[in-house]
Structures are given as structure tokens and as C-alpha cells.
Image 1 (tube, helix red, strand yellow):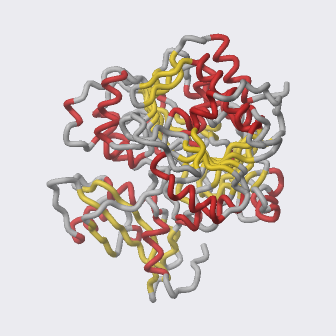
Image 2 (cartoon, rainbow, N blue to C red):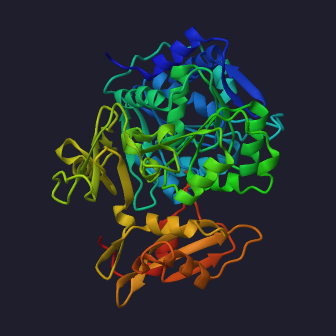
Image 3 (cartoon, one colour):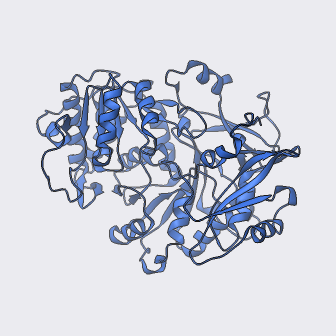
Length: 529
């Protein structure tokens, strides 16, 4: 069977034409309207000279037009390329120079950046404003003259015929976060994304009844993949422009949302919002979480404060389109023989095969820590313009994730750390995730990041950076003593920095350890682990 991502949209428009597809800032479009608009935008792209295999890049916060761009460039025979809004301008320019898009779509918050990118990147023929011009959606004068208007393009274009791309044809480029070096363009085919869509819909048990709250940035595939999931199930997505804990809680109440995806940082801020108890969250049936390790203390807090909600943990990465494993609600128990599984990332989902390899790429026995490797129809074709790096990471037909973990006798996989985040102190391997979990168990801690810093005697020393909950107090000595009551002394932080300002986060709302770590390693040799 040859897969076509556009068929997901066409099927939804045929099977549920009047069902709500996307709600955004007071505007709801149904599946038939959404499909029509995507076909018209594809026609507009072709009218601008967009050809097969051309790229259309998007620099935008979440909007309903952004959702349409998950389909329109593909419908026209090209590739869809979202850009991380958290990047600095030089990083954005580097990304666009790498993928050479013909069209750049921007929202109202990124007009000047879009213009600067276009000026620096000769491949960009047109910049399109894909947003309402003002916050209240009232047109307050014309948009800048050098920008095309998204709605005008749709109004003046005839619907295009589906270009019929599918199978092993490239559908999109999603760039990695770039927090550990140069960002890489992950080449995903129709087959890759379609396999993930089928497998993840089954694993998460999504159906057409769901009202899905989308607060995470859809330029990141963890959230963006849900666009295809909900096209398959003809479900309703309520989109927020950006994450803000109070707005998310209010939107759950207002729209009676039943499903939400939250990375641990987001969930932490929601649960500790000063007005959390005031919101009616009774409609919420399911929470998906992942994208970074979930501290056990935070997960138990979430399960306690949301007792009627089913929790699903997904583990994966952009290169896997993105889902690889699932820990379902049956394994979210805090007592009894299955409670230990709460610390795992679950077992491989239907389309993924996972092994644990040693440094020589040989499989290791159960209980032995090694590198997680994966293969399946969802695995990327490679990195854009990076053949050597692609061959290295896909060697032997397995994608090498860079994550360290082990498998137990029942097939559950336990992630102990990113290999690059492992701290080596005095010859001992210390996994920052375990230390962070201990720190988070202190009742005063709001956010935490643990990493290694240079140490003349031990090579590296364990260092923690934390912020505290409003009205709570804790000092360095108290936090270190707290950790000593939970984990071995050599694993505990040797130093703790308590910050008043929030910790830096990536566009996917993950704490940027690389940014926190960098000042300590300036002038030192590169750390090898």
C-alpha cells in the first residue's frame, strides 16, 4: 500500500465534513472547510512557482493556519519545514540556508525576523503573513508591502489537484532542537509519518470523540504529529498560540477538553498554578506526557491531583517520527508489584523494534545498561545534506538514539540518561535523571536541572540549578541533605544554585541544560563520556 498524508485530510473531509477540526482564538473550522483551504493554498503555492520537492518553511506560534500548512505544501508536491521560534536569528538563517525554501510563512510576531531571513537567504522568493494582522483580528491597516497575505492567496486561488506524493517521497523536514550542536534537518517520508500516525493513534487509543487541547508548539514533532493523528480520527483540536499555565487550565474548562499533551515542565507549572483548584477539569480524561524525563515526584503529584485522568507516557524523538515506546494507564500505579514500572518508558509500540546495544553495537542482556537503538517503518530517511552523519547514526540498519537505558525481564525499558548528559565523577557513572528525581522530591522545589561541572579531583562534580515554588524556602545545605536521604552520597549534588529567574527552556518547553552547563565548561576541554 502506498501511503499519502493528504489522504488523511481527504478522508476526514469525506467521513466527517461538518465535524469541528480546529478551534483557535474563537474561530472553528470543520474538516470540509479545512480540506478546501488546504487545496486552495496548494493552488496558491503553485501559482507562486512552487514545484515538486520545493520547500515551504513556517516560522510561527501555534495558529489554525499553521495546521493547514502541515498539508498544503505536501498537497502541492513539496515539503513542509517548521522552524523553531525560540532560535536566535543566526540559527534561523542557518536553518533556512540549509533547506533553501522557496516560500516562508510567518505569523504576526515574526514579521521582522521573516524579513531578515528572506534578506539573508536568496532561496526565499516570497514571505507570506499567515496570521491575523492584529491581536483582535481587526485589520488595522495593510500588512507590510513586501509580505503576501495568506487569506488573499486562498481567496484568489483555485483548489489544486493532489500532487499524489506518497510512500518513500519526502513529506517534511523537522529540525532537531540544536541544543547539543548544529541543528539537523530530519528527513521524514510519507511512510514514516503514516506509520507513526497509525501506531500512535492505536497506542494512545484516540478516537473521534476527543477534544484535544494543543498547547505545546507544533513546530516540534512531539506536538506536531498530533495534527496527522487527529486527521486520521476526525477529532477536534483546540489550539493555543503558546503555553501559559493559567490559560491552559481555563481552556480545558471552557472547551471541555478531554486530552492534552504536556512535557514535564508544563505539567509542573499547571499543577503548581496558584488557582489550580478553581478550574473545572472534570472533562479531562487523558494526559499524554513525554519529550523529557518525568520526575517521579511530579508524576505522583499529577496522579494525586488528577485522580480521574488516565496517563500515557510516550518516548521517542524527531528521527522516529516520533513515537517509539508507550507506558499506558494500566502501568501507572503507585503501589504493588507493578509500581516499579512507573519509572520506565514502557514497551515498544506496534511499529517499533528496540534493542539495547553496547559500544560495539552488540545486544546486551536484560538489566544491562547500554544505548537504545531502534528500527521500523517510522524511522527517518536521514539528515538533510548530512550523508556522513546519517550513515553513522543509522549504521547497521538501527537508529542509535544516544539514550542510555536497560530492558527488564518483562520487556519494559528504563531510560537512565542521555549518554551526553551522563556525569562521570571519580570513575562512577551518575545519571542526572536520578539525581533530578531526588531533588524534585523536596516540597519547595519547582524546577531543577542537574549536570556535571569541571572538578580538579574528580573530573566532574554533580551540580544542581533549581527554582523554588512561590512562598517556599530551602537552602543549598538543606537540598543536599535531602538528596542524601534518598540516593547514594556520590550521586548527590556537590553544589546547588538557587535562582530567582525561570530556568531557560527550549521551543519544546524542555529545560536547556546545555545553556546552563556552558559557562562552567568554557575554557575546558570538551567533555567525553
